[in-house]
Length: 232
Image (cartoon, rainbow, N blue to C red; front, side):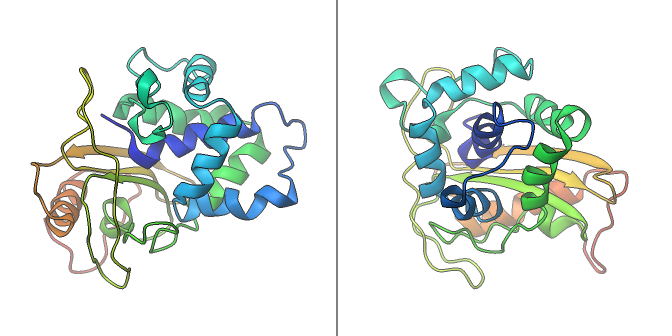
């Protein structure tokens, strides 16, 4: 799948990789860093993407985390489009496993701590990003969501938004609307969940939101507690 905003996990890890042992984030980057992870701020992600080498970020992190050959940078002629990174659910699980099991404690805190403070509305395009995991399970959870290709929408209390991540590629569908939910569920990050979906062209954001929620609620997730009265 095209990753949409899920690639921000790799952008964040690459940013921190050689900042040990303290992994301090400069004051000028801190607000943008938090917004990228909590509120899926596209402008912040684009700044870090360009500053740190664009597609080479994905190549480096795929190597360091032993991700599969399915995780690749965007096409060379679209290397500014970080959301065109190819990523699988299985490799997404590997990323979270690294964060939970292997990453230095400070790295884990910086990334997972922000994902646990996910805001209802995204910072740049104002999508309601509390779909999937965030709607299917009670807290505690940590999420990094992804969406692309829905055009102008208005969902919940968020303002209308425009997504420009459309296009064509040989191996990764860049045309159909994509909606992904990834993260951890339950006390102590008990379970990792990664659900990637594509929808027919023309599908509304509301329908995709509902369908992804129904699919996520159908999963058996150890440690996950569904809100009272939910069904699937």
